[in-house]
Image (cartoon, rainbow, N blue to C red; front, side, top):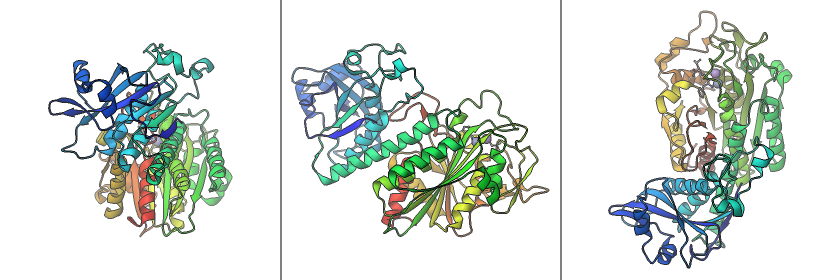
Length: 526
Ligand code: BES
Ligand code: MN
Ligand code: ZN
């Protein structure tokens, strides 16, 4: 990850490859946002006018590059659009700052050091700029050829040398911006330091989840995923327990075994726990970890399986959130449950029509082996509830139906408790992760009636995301507050990058879960 430094230097005096300034959409054209005053002075007070001449409006994510004028120590000035200027003298929305900082960091890929002269006077703004810049300065280079991976940018690239994609060095393939310096901060101030440190932990853990999601399924399978958890647990002093296929069979985890039995890579259930000696609450997090979803015997058609390495995004988010809670030392216990399996067709695979006996003892008729996520989650939810946590949250790339309903950037939130659903939705909103509450209409349950088992793993096609939620609800203990996050849309970005969100794995839900844990620690929820 990029290095982060706070500095009280002004935008004009920092020695760097570039300095970033915010520009907002004012009523009469672009306006320079707070933080950019000394830069504007170096332009003789005409920076907004220069930008307007260049066609800039201050619109969200707009990037304009200018050669630095005399009196500015950086080589390049990058103006990034913040969207509409806030009313009066009000502060900018943290999410607007996060996105602008992210867009600027992306546009500076290939360069070594940049100063961010965005509004960062108050802690919330400072935190947002730090977070956005670090999240935007991400790239997944693990699978690039040696030559490409080592193309570090630096001097050559800062002169606009073309990257291998021929897009002028700013394309995806340049190394991410190496050093982020946030200006206008108080580097020795306790609160400012804490805000920067929190941003570093959050970004590192979101990036951990992104890396896992981006790792192809030939390298990331249940056993290797569990090994990654074990190594992080060791590093951060967490307790980890891994159930392998033998232990799962012995323990009666029929859902996880049933989904994983078709693959040469057997399943795992991982329990990762962080405890705080003064914790009053315990939050259980359950993640869908299908390291590859081929659909199984109900095979997905070509065109629907190319990105299915992303089907472990829920488990990645849970893993990263538990580590983040530990690194932040939150006064709350957080237990992560990762239900890991590879859904493959083979002679040993579960057939459509087979009946599984789940960990809870309930029987499930598997009508469609592509509705596998709910099967592994059901076992993990039942197991998680045995420990009587104060609340359980599951996170899953569960249904294409939720994508159809909410699009590619918003996740659905369902729950058995209205107040808890609101708490989850509000936590997501606070950190800038779009989500929306969805209902669990009881009448859809009868569509899952099975003539031979307690329930079928499929129901009505209409409202498929809610049907999946209703299925999961059956495996949550009575009286335990539970929320279900269907992140099928936002977990994996198939279009172009935007703001601080890269193409590919996004790390969706990590920051929401951490925020929820923080609120639980503060006694605001549960
Ligand atoms: N992993 C998929 C859902 C998914 C689809 C995630 C697209 C991300 C992008 C899930 O296992 C699945 O296949 N769901 C089926 C359920 C159906 C068979 C009831 C679906 O949504 O089509
Ligand atoms: Mn599936
Ligand atoms: Zn799936």
